Image (tube, rainbow over all chains, first blue to last red):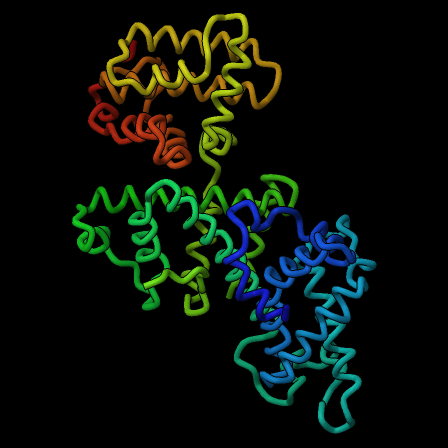
Length: 248
Length: 163
């Protein structure tokens, strides 16, 4: 399975318990094994991190084909080979910055191997324009910003799939639709409670109550996922604060 | 039409991502782990039965009694006091949480079914916890009890009758 296929298939596998069943560190260790369970862990690892990895590399390379190739290469040569696992040390911090640093090292090595003249600078951190100078032109969004946005999107998507499953189990499909209408509308606007409830024949209060019910599910799921990942409820708070701070 | 299995936030703005993250960043409401644990009602019932060993009660019976609209206030008071005993007897965090949920459920049932608040603590302060419990137990009879208690705004505004 390619990384892209794994990412696309993520939401089709397993139930709610199949998503974020373990921490990123243990998943990485499992993914580097050779047995049947490792194959499943590899798919899960790819599903979790494909988008942030591709977003980071894509922001630097600015070439979709090369980005796809290097993304594939990163998972094969850096992750599944066990190199990333050897460098892993949970005591040094969370997985998110660890993976980003590994990506940074990987893409730097890749750029150093390019023919002279193609890349104007191979020590981007030392330049005044940093990573923006890598492709020689201005970039509207930095690689780090793209990485963090993709990371947050991925995290929220996983939580939302779990919430949708829970709503379906509880017969709250309508509740979930209203939650999506309130928070995920592509226009970016938040409809009023009365507008939200009208298509369902609900008044303002009922629409609000039902939407907030789903918001509570969402909060619980997301916090549980982060508490599991970081090892504590306090860690979940710190991670949420960090992610909010990095979104710009 | 088949429903797409995945959810994509690719078209969501950064502002929307912040709003969604913000939903989880809200300060922890009263109750901490209670809603999470209460969401598994089978486990809640099992823990209560475990605590009731030798006391002639079962978790299923206690929870069913609380959810029954016809249960009298005297019985609910009895369950509330019984929950306090269980809380004192509990030896693990999960047992303490189970007993605490039972305690709050008895009080919530009084509000939901009789419009009587069986506690001297301010009901308003408990509404956030009841809302969280109602969300965690949505679709379950016990969730409906907490939901009804949380939404009994008239009672919160001055009709409460502390007992």
